Length: 160
Image (tube, rainbow, N blue to C red; front, top):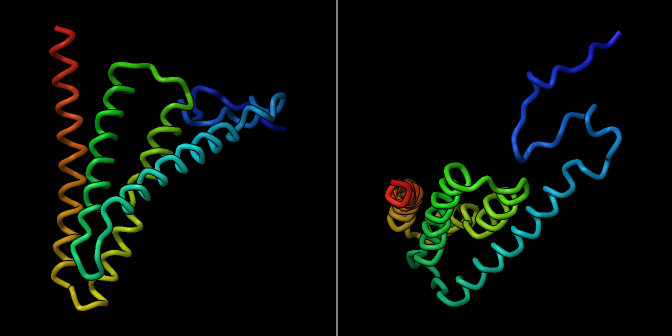
């Protein structure tokens, strides 16, 4: 004998699919739309990142300023975006996966960050790699924190 699921104890959220029992009648309403918007957003973000790398290429062995800037800008935008969708705007279900996970996930490039560090170390530029490792981490954290804090201050001034 099976017991019915209690919806009060199931995880919920704007990005989570309904429980299996709730989806049985409508298989087209599962995760497919979320996957589709993440894929489209990721392609857009990756194209923008690629454009930045073409506009400002990094010579071999040099400090990867473009990747650092892309990651810092992406983190700042995610800080603004998360404040807006959590404090100001009740965003539709697919906005966060499209923009936050897709566009910004495709735009920021922490995999390239890791590969850049590996290339710098292997090519005899270990100090540059270490500086880049620390600078990117600090820039990303500072960008998301300061952008979120500035957005909250701006919003609080407009509502008072």
